[in-house]
Length: 424
Image 1: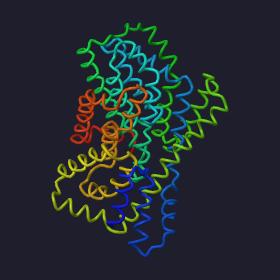
Image 2 (image 1 turned 30 degrees about the vertical axis):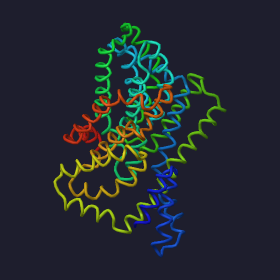
Image 3 (image 1 turned 90 degrees about the vertical axis):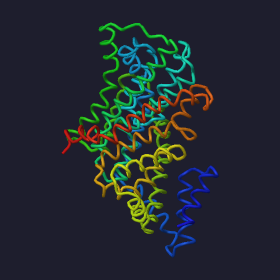
Image 4 (image 1 turned 180 degrees about the horizontal axis):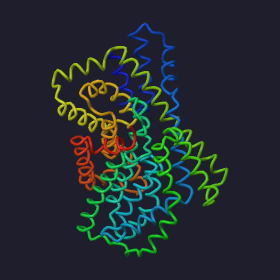
């Protein structure tokens, strides 16, 4: 077991991609500490991705890419501007709301950051916003795509936990909206302090005109959730419907994407999906070895020996996720850590949907926590600011997200009410 952990830790420390570090640790364990043939490495990795549900990942990624290319983002931002642009710090408010809308289409935090940031960051700079503040706000707002359906992270969580992805999607609706509202509250306070400008208040005619322009893109999440709720299609099939709808809008309605560009986007999505799925494949081998060594049961016994109190265990679990989020990639955390804690949390009666959304909010915080805050890194790169310059504006934004996490931990019904009301 020492070989497994040592090789993985050395690989990560050496900067080797996480998937290769995990796969190498599994192979090293079989080679030096087991009589199982190395052929099992390939077998377990293939089994890890042999899942119909995982098809949702490339399909939702493709839908988000097509929407980003198809003149969708400006329409969404214009509509958001008519809704909240007149509030102090109007452009900051537009950024958060636009990220919420686009997150309900793309399902990816980094995609959210890239699509919204490339347009809004230059405009905010012209209006006098400090670029480090804009970058910090964009990183945290982009992470809302991890919580708001159709979140790709929720698809991976559903596969890992054996939980209804449809229920996870619905469970993320209220927490996602409240987290977005909390970020807007912090942005509002910054705007008052820094005297950031507000946009002219839109008339109702302007709002209706902007809504007409954004109506077709905003139908995408309605179609996805509505189809799942009505039992018309599964979460995986919803990804196919979303991709087809995005293709129709981008090619035939707005005519912004050519067949050649569709092929290029498909290849980009295939490369991104391959990275994600390779991590899942390698982690399946890692999880199989942990199960063979009885590690989840041993960890469960050790933790329950410290305390079998529901709240103490939940506190330890959330603290661990927050710390790991500073150093590890989202998918790796899910697939390595969750199988270890899942038996304990199930034993304590934690609702799987409550647990899944709790993990999503944790990982959204981790995606903006140095040193490895991937959404924040992407945001700073687009904004053209040094990573460390954004830190001074980051603390209150992360505090607001953490406050929502505390609410989720203390009030499971905040997450479970919505899915339980619609899916039996």
